[in-house]
Length: 164
Image (cartoon, rainbow, N blue to C red):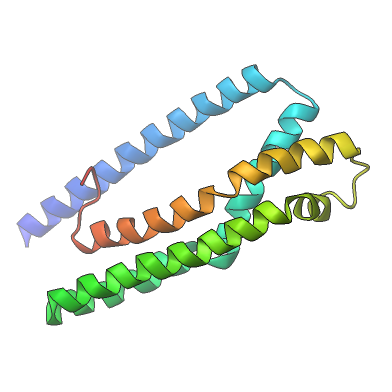
């Protein structure tokens, strides 16, 4: 019992430290972006185009991938490890194919997606075009988000919360 409490405290401390480091580096990244892009159309277009893929991922899969995957994977790990890894492989493949499809559609319809996000604002064609250009590249983030969500779920199933 004492060993479990020490292990839990150690895991909690590790996650807390890593979260603090992540927040600090995120703050530095925002400072660098603000310095690089300045305040204006370029930074607005960049931020809009970078925010939409995050919203798409959260809307389409978000926490569902990890929250559903972990219990299923752990259940299969107990019963049959080979089946567990087969399921993990299938989830990675299916989510990757699905998210690549979303990214392709996002690339094709980038102008309309940006326009839908800015229809209440008087955005010029240049600003929409710039945001659309950025979005065509940023939308591909969601493929990696999905891949990392499944891998993160696998690591959490093995109680690995730091570097694999």
